[in-house]
Amino acid sequence: MSRDLTSTPDRPPTTVVPPRPADPVPSPIEGSRAFGRTVAVLWPGVVAFVAFVAGWKLVAVIAGLGFILPPPEEVGARFIAAWADGTMEPHAWTTIVEVFLGFAAGAGAGLAVGYVIARSHLVERLVSPYLVAAQAVPILALAPLLALWFGPGLLANVVICGLIVFFPVAIATMVGIRSVDRRLIELGRSLRASRRQVLVTLEIPAALPSIMGGLRVGVTLAVVGAIVGEWAGADRGLGVLVNLARASLFDYPLMFATLVTIALLGIACYSLVVLAERRLVGLR
Amino acid sequence: MTGPLPAPSTRPGRLVADDIRVAFRPPSRGAPPTVALDGLSLDVAGGEIVALIGPNGCGKSTFLRVAAGLLAPERGRITLDNRPIAAPDDRIGLVFQEPRLLPWRSVAQNITYPLELAGWSADRRATRLAELLHAVGLEAAAGLRPVQMSGGMRQRAAIARALALSPDVMLLDEPFSSLDALTRERFNLELLRLQERTGTTIVIVTHSIPEAILVADRVIVMTPRPGRVAAEVRIDAPRPRSVELLDEALVSRAAAEIRAHLELSENVA
Image (cartoon, rainbow over all chains, first blue to last red; front, side):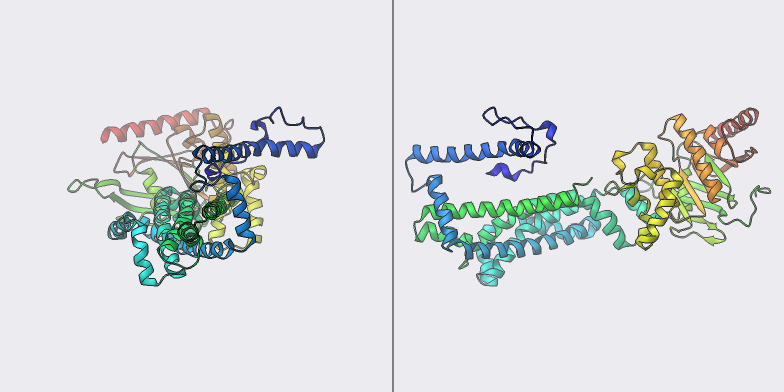
């Protein structure tokens, strides 16, 4: 499933791998040609997914220890059941809200601090040791403390999530803004651009590819942050459900179904950032 | 300092530099500062075309940056139509050695960028854009991105951008140095056609003696660093100019004179 995490740009039709021989020969009708093309674009992903599931099944069978690694069909069935009977949904929503708020807060702060650091050497010297120290302390160790300070629940988890998102976004923003071509800034000055205009029309667009890279890393970490926070103390969320399924219910298929949900959430978040990036940067 | 000028002095765009000195901070402590310009004085009449020529590192580009209001001189005054230039100014259009287009914008958006910064409405920008695209012959390229164009087309776009706010003075820093000789000649002539229509004062920095003679009313030869005016050579060729109409004898005489001044100024240093 991890192969979905790398963004593969849409390939032009000329480089598309021809359909497998087993596929029916595309008829000359336009519609089925488009269908054939879609199949040709999608099949590597489908093959990889099938191989992944088959490998999983193989390990589960060989190991013969179904309760440690439930086979994929069991997890799949539990996944559907958990969503159908409403077990999964409230937990998933809680996590989604935490991820969303935490990412927004962390990325917002990261953008602002990264910009200031990039533009002021004094601020960089003052702030960066703390920044790195905060990043070096494992969030896992901080989480219980934050849960104590902010009370277990939404606020603590949003803070944890925001903290973990902050660093990569701040660094990516700093690097991006620093690498803006000074000659473009001079052009802006020669055209009497205000500070705000320089920021909006030159610095942000020029730094955008780098910033989007930071947001990509940040958004996947946001999911990690939310789950870690939920482990440290919460009564609802996918992290809580993982713990519950493992330690209280001994429902390993549910635990794996929850992990699948978390993975899907991560992929969805990442894809949204990639989509935004293509809209903003892809035109160059 | 300068004699009677061919252009009537009532035209806007008279650029006067008086005793300009620019020194840059030394690279290491205790070292003497790098003096780029010292005692540079220049009087460019409205509508006049002046070429600055001189050895590498003689401060030609530095002077343009002072004239564009990007760099404050340590000493001396620079005025445009008797108003001091202390900061970048709408009356001045600057063309850099490289096009300096914003790669994420289309040609059209690059050309209208100064208008956008100046707060023009979209309607006014569109009208002005059409004029500018026509002036530089880029009508068909409006939607392209800089990466999709040749170096020459990019520099045309940069010129259109510099013209956007109808400046009284155009400052060009070796604008065509990256083009091949033939294209360069064509671009110089196009620049002259543009200038005939707009009446803009032009100060162009160049390394090329033929280029200077082709475009300029006056060629200013600068000394090596610290730069100041070593000599000036008047090019008394009629306008509008073309390659065929340029008198061979006049060209070779002017070229010899410029070359002599260049060598002389280098030997002095």
